[in-house]
Every structure is written in structure tokens, then in C-alpha cells.
Amino acid sequence: DAGVIQSPRHEVTEMGQEVTLRCKPISGHDYLFWYRQTMMRGLELLIYFNNNVPIDDSGMPEDRFSAKMPNASFSTLKIQPSEPRDSAVYFCASTLGQGHSGNTIYFGEGSWLTVV
Amino acid sequence: SQQGEEDPQALSIQEGENATMNCSYKTSINNLQWYRQNSGRGLVHLILIRSNEREKHSGRLRVTLDTSKKSSSLLITASRAADTASYFCATGNYGGATNKLIFGTGTLLAVQP
Image 1 (cartoon, each protein chain N blue to C red):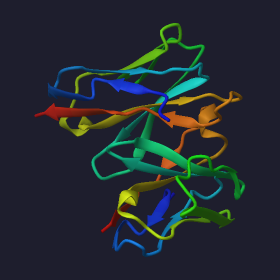
Image 2 (cartoon, rainbow over the protein chains, first blue to last red; image 1 turned 135 degrees about the vertical axis):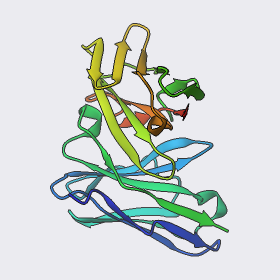
Image 3 (cartoon, chains in turn red, purple; image 1 turned 60 degrees about the vertical axis):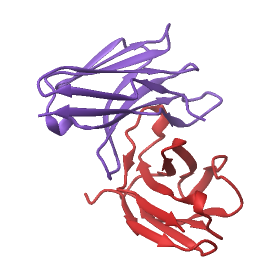
């Protein structure tokens, strides 16, 4: 299995620009998670989907952030407009069943975002 | 908000020594998981222990859980340079108020060859 695939791996963009991060979960997994990792705040859960439906987006920082999952094999996290404080590593992860109930969550390699 | 806090924040040992990392959490849980993150990579699941278990082994890994103290420890025996990574605990609370897997702050382990 190819694992969770994220793109781009690295992106540098200017403040105010739109950023779109992409994720392909592991085939057959019904839960998809977006996490953000920074030195200051650690690993934060932004939003998660079950069967393509957003279940909990309480971790999304503000309206500039949006996430979609149009089908079982693709999800996007969009930041518009981007700000320097959005600089972080964004991880997509997937699992079969709920991760918090004990199922292993599989992480992608992350998208390293720098907003200048 | 973070549920778990790892201790120590950083640990440096010699190859062959044992490494012990601790995790404390705040609310009741159904399970606790440990993940490893190599520099510049994603997190990889290591081991899971359920709330009704006290100890679990997997290869060179040993995990303990003390629900009365709301704490867990991860022991890596006979460490190798390849064990150098950050280690995170994550707590799951299925059916509770917070249906999420929440990660701790992590311990950075450096194993010197």
C-alpha cells in the first residue's frame, strides 16, 4: 500500500496568497484527519471526516481555513488568505474506524508550509 | 488543547542503554497510544494499551499504564541510533465528551552511537 499521500511536500508562499494542501488517504479507510504541527502548539487536530462528511471542525483556527472531502480518495485543506502565523507542518492521516477508539492512525509525510 | 504531556522534553543516551519516557494526561481514557516521529517525517504508530491493561510489550518496547495516576511510560530497551526520534503519547476517549485522539507534547530522544 502506498500509504497516505500528501502534496505538496514543501510550499513557500507570500502572505495573502491562497494555499491548497492535498491528501489521498489509504484506500478503504473511512476516517480522514487533518493535523497541524508547530513548535509552540505541538500537534493539533484541525478537522476530521467520516465517510467524506466533516464530523468535527472545532480545531479549525478561523474562517480562513476550510477543508473538503469530495470523495473517499481525496481531501483538501485550503487557507485563504494565508498569514505568516500559518507556517507549520500540516499532516493528513487516515484510519479504518475511529482513531480514538483504538484503531491505528496512519499519517502522511506532511506538507511543510512557509508563509513569508 | 493537549491532553498529554511527555516527560522529559528531551533525552540523550548512549547506544545500548534503556530509554524511559513518561506521559501524563488529564481526563479518563479508553486507550493510550504511542507514536514515533523521525525528523521531517510523519508519525508512526508504535503500540496501544487499553485502559484495562497495565503493561504491554512489543519487541524492545514496553508500555505501562497507571489509570489511577493518569500516567503511562514507554521503555525502549537496548536503544539504537535508529531510535533517535520524537515520541508522542496520544489518548483516546471513545464515547466521551471529546471524541478525538489527542497528542501530547512529545519527548525528543537522541541515541548517541
